[in-house]
Structure formats: C-alpha cells, structure tokens
Amino acid sequence: VFNGRNYVKQEFLMRHRKQGRALSRNASHRRAMLANLATAVLEQEKVKTTTAKAKEVRGLVERLITVAKRQDLHARRQVLKTVRNQAVVAKLFDSIAPRFVHRPGGYTRIIRLGQRQGDAAELSILELVGTEVVTDTEPNEEEAKPRTGRRKKTEAAPVVEEPAVEEAVVEEIVDTPKTEPSRTAENSAE
Image (cartoon, rainbow, N blue to C red; front, side, top):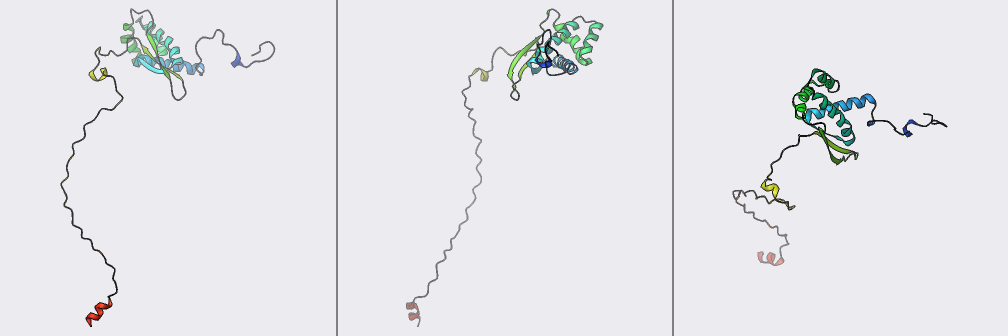
C-alpha cells in the first residue's frame, strides 16, 4: 500500500472502519466457524470456547433468535442459511424462541473461565440465558461442613485369621571337625 512516499506493508496499517474480528482466518473459514459455533450453542445451549470467538458468535446467535421469534416460513429459511441442521432449527423455533418472546434481546451470557494452560488463551462459556441448573436451597450435610483438609478415617477391613500351620521341627546337624585320635586312645586300645 502506498502511503505517499513509499510502500508500507498491509499489516502495519490501522484498522479504521473495520468491524468484527479476523480470528486469524480468511473470510470463508471464519464464516463457517461462526456458523458451526452458533449451531453448537443452539443445540447444546452452552459451549466452551475462547473469549474472542464467544464475543464474535454472540451477536450471530442473538440475531438468529430474534429472527426465529417471528415464527414464519421466511424466518425459518433465513435461519437455515446459517444453521444448516434441520433438527437444530426445529429446536430453535419450537423451544428456544418461545422462551424469549417477551425478552427484547440479551439472550446469551458470556462467563469467563480464565486462561487455557497450553497456550494461555482466554476461555469462556457462551450460554443461553435461562439454562443455568437450579440447585437446592438447602445444602447437604456433607457440603455444609467446612473441609478440614484431612482424609476421612476409613474403617480397617476385618482381619481374617488364617488357620495355624504346624511348625515342623528342624533338627540341626552340627558337623564337628574331625580331629586326630589322641595317642592316649591308641595306647589304651593296645
């Protein structure tokens, strides 16, 4: 790119009036990846991904839900351009969109998880609002007690006594060194 005096590499120019993240992919790869992520979010209602991808796909999922709230054939065909799975589109129109009829946007939430150990990428969970698991208000007895950091003592397994085995008597044979017969014995034998 010519800047007036000389040519400058494209990577050093400022990104004025550029919308969206490139995510280190070309346009077709990026479009396919975002469509796949949006399909996964609508299918499973929760997906774990990097924060940059979650922020980028969030707008797409919100638009798909807003279009699905119209509940007509044209809306279904518009959603099918992005989400190519008939079962997911049916779930979107039959169960997801009716949940958000009275909600004017803000259908998703991003929960940050911290950094991935391998490459230190910031991870997040992108989920639909209203998919959180309802827990009991009363904690269990074991959960209510603070942990002391020690293991619970386990009862020792019952000791099974083995039948007594009779011990064999071992006789020791001691070799005494042979000595020459004394002369007194020879004399007495004579």
